Length: 183
Image (cartoon, rainbow, N blue to C red; front, top):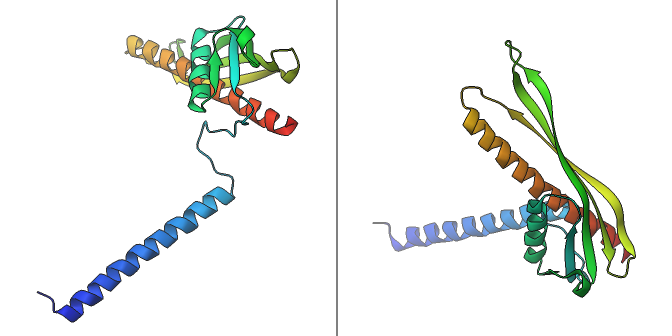
């Protein structure tokens, strides 16, 4: 058992190590924040953006759900009735494409490039456009395994859902960027 003097030295070393670790953490966080780092999907949504309706003219309903989830994460009220909302996100059109990028020796498709395009605009309920009609494009690569067709179909559906989630995040990022420029 260490004597009192050694015990005191060990405790002071542990205390100094913790202080040093905290100091390193503070320096690291300062560097990250200074370079503009922020988590994926986190935008600086303006405070005045408080009541939004999502209008899907032609588009996939998953996109509407992802937009709603992201807006509510920022404590922005999403109105089901556009006449009650101050701002509208209008999904004018979306479509999905697949192009073969690679074939096997037996000429069966092995790899596809999937593309998801969304055209949207953001405006006040009175009609003034804040973000004019714009496009978001998300692409992914998928490799098809002919031995596991069911698994490949599931993977394709997961990727399509992920692409719609990504498009929703990009739309909100662009709205936040444009809104911060105009305010």
